[in-house]
Length: 221
Image (cartoon, rainbow, N blue to C red; front, side, top):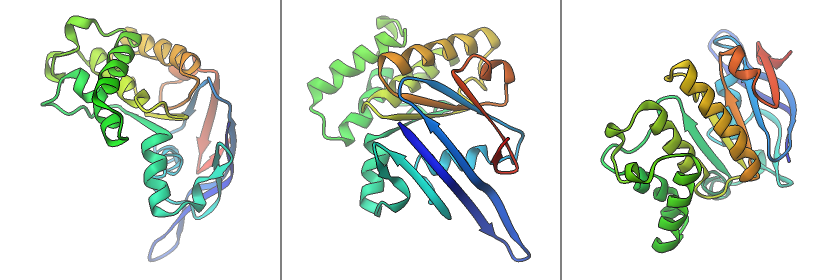
């Protein structure tokens, strides 16, 4: 269970204070795909950065497995980002000179997993996301956009995170491929017992998720 209580992120400018996130409460159980929708500037990206420990909140708490991320030290945050959170980006962010298989193995290498185990889990995950075995040794440039996003999702799952944060995961895909990716994330949330939270501007995509949160001016409305 992920619990966010009265989370705030305020930025001070020369003239005033910008309330990017202004008192958000939400709960996300394991095994679901949830979405955040809202216009540009509503606070979606800031909230994602706070949940992923890429930024610290001005106030409030973010609890995962009963531990408050907002109170963690620098070293604890590094471990949290490595072991508890996976990221999926609109632009895939795969390493271009590595194969699909090697891209999925990378997070496990940083976590100290033995090479044989890394390869075995990477192959399993790529199979799970539906990437044909004949394509697993291809570099990203030789894969379609949908295939690259499948690799990115497999990589996000590598260290068995409790939370996967997806920033516009279907933004660069056509409608049909985007729907397939959403269906895939739905299935993986359940089979991998993880929570997936996707930021999207697409109301149709959001309607396919288990929970939807609409943000406006840094608040859930």
